[in-house]
Image 1 (cartoon, rainbow, N blue to C red):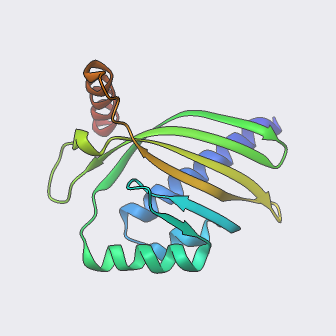
Image 2: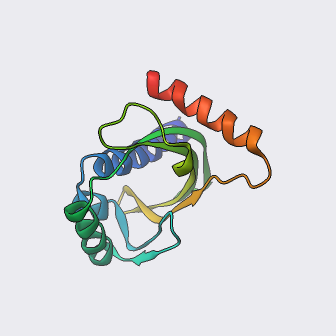
Length: 151
């Protein structure tokens, strides 16, 4: 039973991260990080710690209308009682649009750690789902994400 509740807590943590991105809440996103958490963005940029994440994302949200995430969680795996990995795929719906932009599909991972009885993100990585040389894989992911968007 504990594994199931931990898995759900980690899914909830991940979905909270995406919800806060979708609402442009940089401080809220940063609050989900562990005390020494890090982020690797879609373009390879890195943010270390809550303050840097909040400042960097705050500037992005202030200066750009960002696309909204649509996600599918592929796996939640407890490595230890206080460490877990979540893997997911995402698509992004640009502002004012109703469909996913396949060029921004990505694979996301979080390493979650339990701190003071709460799950926090120690590492969030967002990697482009380029699938070089495999256009069928890219098209299939886009179709799957479109089905998730319709739900």
